[in-house]
Image (cartoon, rainbow, N blue to C red):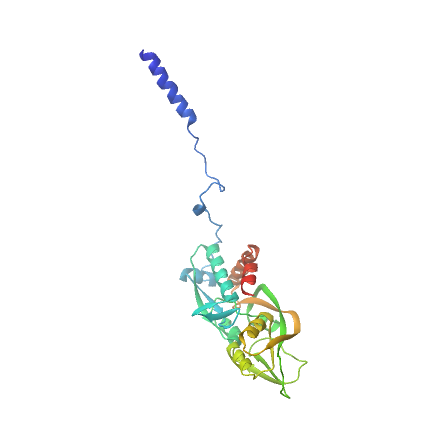
Length: 270
């Protein structure tokens, strides 16, 4: 009786071996999500601007804090379209070079934007900064991430014989076909205050800023005229002579746009 019993045990072992799964090599489709990652960029040249950023684990971003909906303090937090986009750019560079970069925010006044970039106060700037031929000779500009109209905002009731035409110093565009006294403001907080006090009749601004100013003022204003359609092309800026940083910013903007996140930021903020 031993022989049949041994044969039965052997047959059971063979069946178990046949039923055991065959080890397989993991493919990209079967890999655990936390094991996946994108391809790394080649190591930057030693001593380059990108190399310094990666070694410090910090990337400095110049943004504005006086120009909602692009950049402004709200409840103690700096936020807005450009702030969110700068954060996305920093994250894309972190992913590309496999380093957890921290963003150091540098708040820049409108009139000093070019100087801040030229002086190296930040590694890149996203600050409601429009391309012009002159600016392109002063700093390195990225691809365009937003186009918008230059518009004229007008008070609902204008009584002054010589209207006051306002704009923030250092910004582009003029109302050349309107006669009046030209006044430059330091920032958009001053603009809103002047609107509330009925001290300004016209404003030359970009459309998203115009819509925010109209909502913010206690007095009635409206967009009365499009001065130039799609005239403002917003770009990021990098110090001239830092092509590695400019390439990294452009690559980041490409990825953000292709993923749909740039369009999402447009819908969320503008």
